[in-house]
Image (cartoon, rainbow, N blue to C red):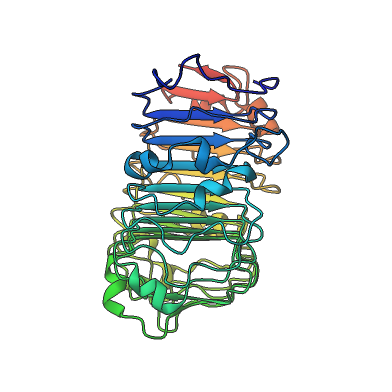
Length: 434
């Protein structure tokens, strides 16, 4: 409501509170709203205020009074469980109140103050999100509540990373997401968080390595289930000797242009089900002991220097592999098809982003008797399918943004139509042929 200026209380509010039973209050995109909100909210559990930039901004009127006097802070301390403040600097005074003892979720976004985190956060706090707090320099000296299960930090570049002592205290933390923050961080210490199961690291521009941190317990790494690293331009190495993460089921490395080596002994990760590596132009080799034996999904793309190896990869032995996705790595695709490296149990094959690929030559597709889905996307130069045709098992074929091939696959009139006519469902661009 772009023109809303003031929330007027109801007449006789002392005898009849406005919202005695209100549990959830959300104010969003009211850029002119200032002044008094309801002053008595005894049952309020969830408060979200976003893009209300002048709300409680200052004494712009003679009758302006601080937040702590407008809202019954005592009632909030007992009831408020979920607090989100986005781009409302005037509400920083709410964070200055005494501990909100019932608070379990706190989300602070677009704050310019250096002290938006108070020394004594609720001992019940489970989820903490910090977004675009550009002036935030450090965490509270006494650390974060041990009750935290989820921590997300986004675009807080000046923030100093957690100390080892603080990490070790977070005995309940399960999910940690660090995005475009903590510019001073050069080495991420694995194994310090006692129970961490999911770790995402994106855009940490000075990060050089992932290591087993000083004082870390390898036993802690048995809880790690998912590890994802994206767009860390200076990342060059992983922990020496590989990842001691026996229960890791999902591993992604994407857009790290200076990385040359992936973790050693990746074949020892017997719990790994999903592996994605993409945007790694300087990686020359990996999986020299073979790929993880129980992989179900393998995605690889834009690894220009990488050469597949029958001896090292052992793709044919991956009897659990259901999905293989390949993009922007034409040399890998050509080798895989020519040498028939894919396992016969494969269910789904996705090929995309091959700019100069003209044909899918080789018998690599014909020897896949279980293949049901084939998707080809954004291969501008691709003109023909294998001369031997496609597997009889295919039930779905999708071709999109491949102008030459799409033209040659037109129903009945295209040169390639005879190779695909047996497939029950075909999608060419936006057209579905059944």
